Length: 308
Image (cartoon, rainbow, N blue to C red; front, side, top):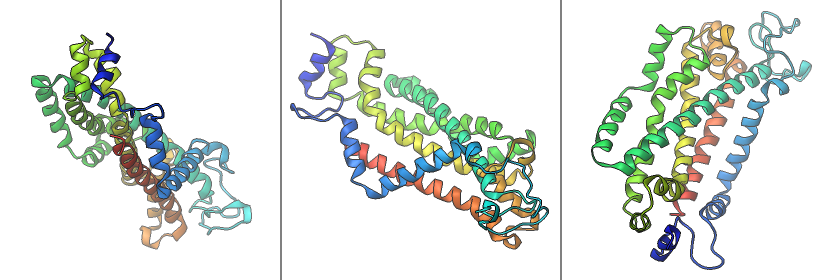
């Protein structure tokens, strides 16, 4: 008798409903997700914003440091003239083009952090959650120590020792700390799932730990992992923008980001005295991006949580 036969006999397979017309967990999660209009709208807007950021250089009308000679050394408000829909900054650069380039950098950093943190966090969480015992205690004690270090404080310290703090360096610092979020979630999920009947049946059938993890535990944890990765992506956006805001001047070194575009407004003295569009436009794009990520994360959490 195969492992799949034993698991089926227990009536607790990897999440599929019984019956000839049963739907898999992915289809059921998708059906529950589309029933949330706010989540669908947020996902559509998020995809458009991410696409705009990915194609930032191709969508931008002007090169990153192009100066509009009619507005050089002054800020001009949003206008259809010259297609300066977001206005120009204090040097006469098109702000919409700057935002598109900045969006590209910010999204790239956040995606890199989310991808690496998720992969490493899943590995650590899977090992500790499945093994348990002293392995779980020792590894999770180290994870708890890392969690105690405020990520924002680590970023601000990095500005001092690794200035200029380029987006790549920011991404590396974030990856060193943010994988713990995924690791703790996966570890908790694995610790619960390993007590389930279908895992015990797989053990009884002689399945190897590797087969149990990849065939039974990971498929049942995909929803949890996706939600955790979404959370890491949103938090990485916030922290990257915050670090860039305080690390004023990196735009001359590594190009614009949403954070240093907002920080550039302080060149007028402070944000309150700066022309409103110079900080409102990049901040608004960042807010829209974060709100969409949060709504998508909440909707995914409900959709996958309901499939359990």
